[in-house]
Image (cartoon, rainbow, N blue to C red; front, side):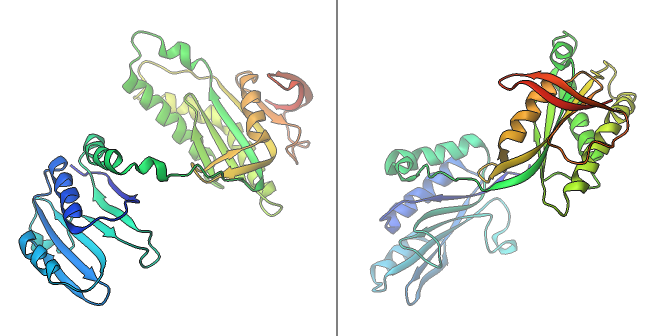
Length: 320
């Protein structure tokens, strides 16, 4: 079984080697597959001990050392042969001070057996070192950018899923097929972000004057093709219990801001497009009047009014 990998940093001050050894031992206790540990101690001017298994020897070397400590490293090995992997399967590193542009503290690099084993290790750290006090909720103010936002929504999804014979594995297969179909219709010029919304998908292109027309054309052309593609997908052998066929689509355009914390976009176009798709009849594409270059599209009905929550009477294009 492949275990998930991660990197962690814990800003713990003033650890001596015995404290570090205790933390490594605790990590082994909650992750028992790591049966072997080797220790490396680096001084500011010399290497004190390198890949040593015998902790007693490490302590003796440390007791006779006059150099200041630069780094403690513990390499952890699983059931494999250490000679086949001299760098270990994971490692814990402690830096007493800022080193090579890395902040001081305890670092973990490697894999974990489970979310529970990570909790059991970190619970000791949070309980003994009050790490939560060191995290600041620094705001990140977004820079305005031009975006084209699209929402595609499957109609009748909730009622369909409430049927007693529709189980969650079938629903997952249905939604992954829908999500991948939406991804495929925009393959010529993929959006910068695709976000799963339960029974729908939000797509955002961050545009400028060079690619604005391309993004709009790919978005509208793809949406026009979506219904026929989706019906073809549902004819396959996987969906023996059927699926909702109705789809509503909406587009909006304008200024928003990107938030890097979760790679998302916030702003009026995103708000508008989610309201539009809620008011959109199945088989129709509602297009915000702010989207440029739509006027000459075939099958376009002129500006119609749509009642949007919080926005009231809102004029849009309707493409059918």
